[in-house]
Picture 1 (cartoon, helix red, strand yellow):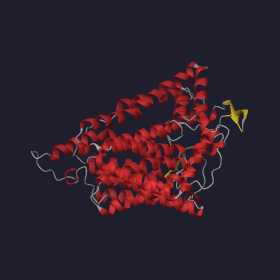
Picture 2 (cartoon, one colour; picture 1 turned 90 degrees about the horizontal axis):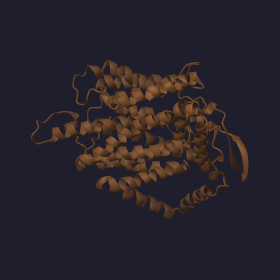
Picture 3 (cartoon, one colour; picture 1 turned 90 degrees about the vertical axis):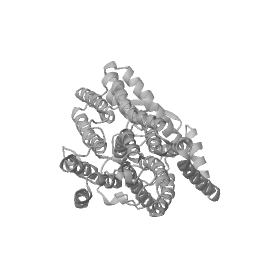
Picture 4 (cartoon, helix red, strand yellow; picture 1 turned 135 degrees about the vertical axis):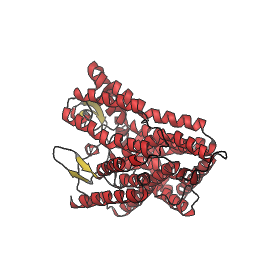
Amino acid sequence: MLLVLIIDLLVVGCLISNAVTKGFEHTLPLAVFLLMIFPSDSQITLPGLFNFTTQRVIVLTLMGLYLALAQSNTERTIPQHLPLAFLFVLQFLWLGISTAQSVVFTISLKTVLSQCLDYFILFYIFAKSVRSVETVQKSLMGFASAMIVLAYFGIGEAASGWSVVSIFPRVAHRFDAGSYGEVDRIGRIQATFDHPILFGGTIALAIPVALYLISVSKSAIIKAFLWTGIVAMSFAIYKTDSRGPWIALLLSLVFLAVLGGRPIRRNVLILGILALTVLIARPGVWAALHDRYVATADPDSPMGESYQWRYQLYNIAFTTLRQNPNRALWGYGPESFYYLNLTTDFRLDGELHTVTVESCDSSVVALMMENGYVGLFFTAMLLLAPAIISFRSYLQLEDSRRRLPILFLCNMCAFYFLMTNVAIYGWGQQSYMLWIILALATIYPNLAQKQAAADSPAAPRIQDSASRYPDGALSSRWT
């Protein structure tokens, strides 16, 4: 606990010092870096109450700084209203109804309150405080830098077997129950994440971000840092041995190659050439990937059983909800899945067994069971609205300003794909980054319009960060 307390004090001190000296908006990229770098094991447990993770300390500190500093800034360059406010109201109203009907009321209530603290406040702060494209880029740089640092930790973990999370007090995670048919794949790395698949999934978001940042950077130092980081992250995602993140990354790269524009397309091509070179020079890598595919396609293998379990979860959810129309409407309550003691017939080791459902390797299934079909619909509306905004921005903005919305759309699609087969939503570092991306995606069209007006020859030169660093010229001073 002493180590965690020291970390929390240092984090709070860094954020306050940075906000006082540079301003609140310039503190946000640092906050992104810190949110990603620390494990959920970095927490102080208050029995019967919330666990004060370092991430929650960061969010609370940001909230205090926002109230103390950001509100005093009279310059308003983005709308006063909160984006997606109506969808948030619907979401929390339905979560309240679902909680009132929950089979584990106390746990559901704590879950809803923690979601509000962890994610809604973070969304609010970023949506209301970011006033320039430069801050958006720096926030993405903070994310990419954190994942690059963690990738190097992961490389060290693969080489030595020592994990940085071992220095923190061990806490229970929802992945501890394991997946049916899953085997203990030796050598998987997780850095500071709760599970290798979460680490891999977040890298699948970070590599496209790094490719975008390279395309807009004018600094050779930043480009070199990002390219070496991409190589490190590529090795790290391979060593997570996680099929979902591999697929998510591949789909993201194809997505960017088609819609990302010439600079990003060139970077994707370079990365593809590097990957092909590795596959040719190290045939063992290709053999390992091929073995994973063959094992996944074999329903009697442990990895095949793990793959089939994802589909079985949907069957369990549909069958259970069909038997209880009321629960199909509002669900069993947030975070209730692990307390339902569901059973199902499932094939293990080639034989049919009746097993207790102890894990839910799908965020979509968990939302369906816990919040009902209506709650799942409201959540889908909330998550898809920023994707629609980004796609419309991509269609409407000029070429030089279209790369950011297509990057946001790429990240959102990758995350939503992972939600169908991974318990990735509503907890962990990756969810903090999701809500930051959602906030940035919703406000970017207004920022781009402001910047376009400032860059217009007929407009007076406004000496602010947006005019000094237009989209396409990332400053080397990113913090």
